[in-house]
Every structure is written in C-alpha cells, then in structure tokens.
Image (cartoon, rainbow, N blue to C red; front, side, top):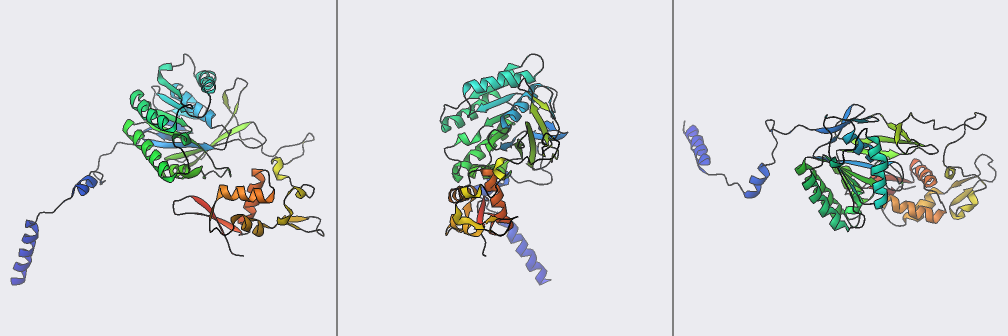
Length: 385
C-alpha cells in the first residue's frame, strides 16, 4: 500500500511540472505528419501513355546530350497546354493551361521561331497567346534571371514553367552550395504557386542517362519528382523520349517521333537500329569512332598499346591499367568527366563514343569502378591489380 501511494505521489509530482517547449520545437511541430493529417492530393497536369506526369508543386527534369531533341519535347509540352493531346502527351483537365517558357540559351529570333513556327502550328485553330508567357533572358545576368523568374511566376500564375536551361540560373554548376540554394528556391516557388517547374539540363559528356551535369545535376536527381531523357539513336532521323526516374508513376513506353517537312514532330515507330546495305545485308550502324582497325591504331599513343603481331584476330589491345593509372595518378577518386579528359589527352582518342567503349572495357576488366562520393555524385576509383 505504501509503495502504491509512493508511485501515485510521483505521478502527481510529474504532472504538476509544466513541460518546457522551445520555439524551435513549436516550429518543428507545424511540419509533423500523422495518419490524420489532411494534405492536398497530388495533382498532375498531363498523362503520357496514360500515366500521370508533370505534378503541380514539384520539379520535373528534362535532360540529354546536346542537340538530341530536348527543346522539341518541351515544345510538345507547351503545345499540349493548348491542344488537348500532342502525340502521346495528353492534358488531364479540359480547360487549357497557362505555360511559361524561360529561355536562357537561344537567340531571341530562335525563341520566336520555335514559338511561331512549331508550338503555335501544333495547336489547331487560333493560338491562345494570352495563355503563353515566353521570355528570352539570355542577355541577363544569372542573378537577374532568378529574381525575374520568381516575380514572373508569382504575377502570371502559369500552370507549368519550363526553364531552358536551368544551369544559367547560377554562376557555376559545380558550386554545391549555390546548386542546393537554387533548387530549394525553385521547389519553394513551385509549392507556393501550385505549379510544375520543368528544368532542362544537359547530361555529362559521357552520355550516361543518370549522370546529369555538375553538382546542380546531382541536386536535381535528389529532388526532382521525375526525369525524362531525350535521345537521337545514331544514324537515324528519329528522336525518342524516355522516363528514367519517377517517384510514383512509372512510364515504361518510349516516345518515338521524327520531324516532318514542316518542322513539326510526328509519331513514328522504333527505328531499325541495324542498317542494311544496298544488297540488303546487315551492316553496323555504330558511329565511325567504333571502327578501329590495325590501320588506325597508329594514331593512338603507342605507350598504352600492347601489340600481338602473331595474332591475326587480335593484333593489339589497350593497356588499360597503365592508361587509367596514368590518368588518375595518385588520386583516390576522380570525376568521370575529368577522367575522360585525361584519358583522351594521354591516349590520342578523339571520339567520345569510342572513349565510352574503352571506359566500359576498363570497368569490365576491373581496372576501375564507379561509385558515389559523400555528396552523391558519380566518381571513378581505381581497383588493385
């Protein structure tokens, strides 16, 4: 009985003491999510092959190497804001959407030409000029671009914003702090204005689909809701769009299209990647950079070549361990682009596509391997012999 009274007294004593809640904890409590928390349902602007895409209040990314159809794809997106469907893109709501195109790369005449001769011509009937907010800010500083972008979105209230190219919103895409700040600002703007912000960014020169350029690209991969890669298969006039990452709705189909004589995208099928000669025989459709024979090996630095004079089928090969070891020196890790530059300079390799093949051989033979550094960026490390 005494023990029970003692325990009751302790409980009363604890209840009498007021819990001290700091301002920081009060602020944190505003962001707590529970099973009863009421949140706004995700709202998507479009569908692609029937799957929802381009969510409001979030970031989407469009990437690819240079001249691979990124601007064509963004033109389709903008046209779909006025036209209910464009190829396999479909606007979800019946009412037209407002679109903002923020062009930091091209000349004013190029921007005007794409708007007039491509986007407007994809739209049947009268072009709804009042729903389109197109700006060419190539001549502005990166500080001005970001400031005006925020003001423009807050004023014009577009449903979707396309920034081509997001790299031009900061002085260096390899500045990790600036990259994080810009992406955080864009996420906040998208949330506050209930719009989708789609950013265009190039791939690294390696062409690897998940290797967006610079620290900015790494930050986008971490924060974007979805990523679309644009590509043109070699030796074809076909372009394709592929979703490479999403947080929810996976689009497995690839969108194939080509440009008509009028300069407009038209749907097409997957191209025959293996070409035929005039007699119908299959030929290789690989770029010329892949066709390296004994006659062209002399153009490479011979210090990294191993000759096999008695082997007719394999007369030479790369000394991969020596080549990549020399390129990396005493570094424990190296950025992929920097390594590519060093290897190509040392070896005499002139074509990026052929370097990709040599790099893949180095991976396969465990001369090097790729991994992530502490900030989530893809780097290369040497492996022991």
